[in-house]
Structures are given as structure tokens and as C-alpha cells.
Length: 124
Image (tube, rainbow, N blue to C red):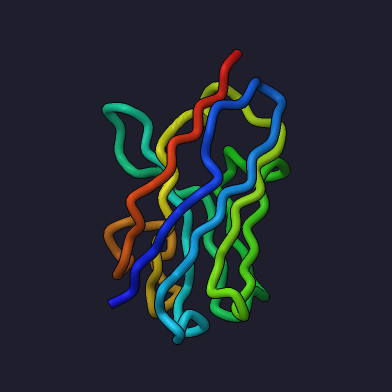
């Protein structure tokens, strides 16, 4: 069982930055592809970013390319989402997720474990 705990959300003005963290309980953290998803009220979970087990490959949704960066520190069992130039439409609950294999990394339901999420609110 892998437990994921997100932190770093909050209220920020448009154009500002936030850094989300997701700490994993599993010592075999390096076996998992990690992803970030977001869910706005009344909407489905949208893919934001994913990173391979080594950190050598990253994937970003088109809507966040050039603004968000995903990274991981395997020594700390933690994955990060650096969010810059935030827009009001980025407002959502952001959750991290873990899966064993890289295929279908954009599909929330293909992940094996999910965190509870952290709220990000961007004011205009």
C-alpha cells in the first residue's frame, strides 16, 4: 500500500507561483511513475503532468506547458509540481497519483494509488 500526501496548495493571485509537493510512504518509490491531476468543481480529473521512475522523462498537458514543471527526488520519496504564471482557470484540487507502468499515464483511472488532494485557488 502506498500512501500519498500532498501539500503546498493555497490562494495566489494570477501570475503568481506555487510549488506542490507529494510525499510517498513507500520505500520502493522509485518503482512508480508519478502523476499530477486536477479537478475543478463539477468536472472530471484532468491530467496535468507525469514523470517516469528515473525522472528522465516528463509529460505535461498542453494547457500547462511552459508554465508548470514536474520533478522528483527519489531520495526523499517526493514528487513536485512547480506552477508559475498561474491563471484563474488553474483553480482546482490537485492530486498526485502513482502507477507501476508508464503506458496510459494520462488516464486517472489507470493509476494504482491517489492522494487526497490540495486546493489551489488563483484569484484574478
